[in-house]
Image (cartoon, rainbow, N blue to C red; front, side):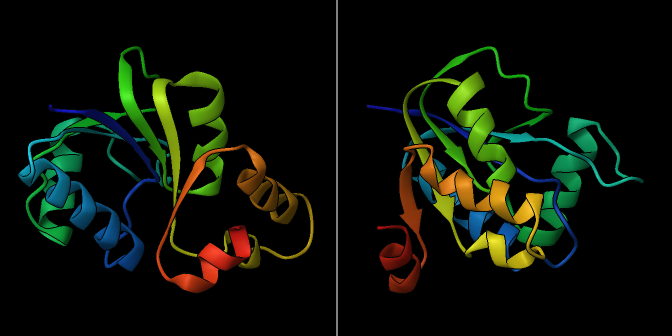
Length: 145
């Protein structure tokens, strides 16, 4: 049975290893018959906001992307699974996405990317939303466990 999966992804950055991993997993799922939708939110200041531009950039940087690309996190459809991929997308998945299951694809302990302050605490709290954690490596699994 084909599942409909929403991925909430930060605006792609040239050479980003995190984005490479996300798009590799999306490609793997679509090759196995799953229907993936990529929702790209906040833009970099000079970023282009068209789906056509985003697809070209993504495929140039990370390879083929057989998923549907959408600009923004204004998600109207219902999904079988919604996946947050950054701390600020976790709350959007929890509060604004209609999905049977909700997960958090965690590649790093994101609070450490910020000095102690509100951004650190917001990132840290994103792990407490009750999303199903999908981690890269054992350390994160242990840390979030």
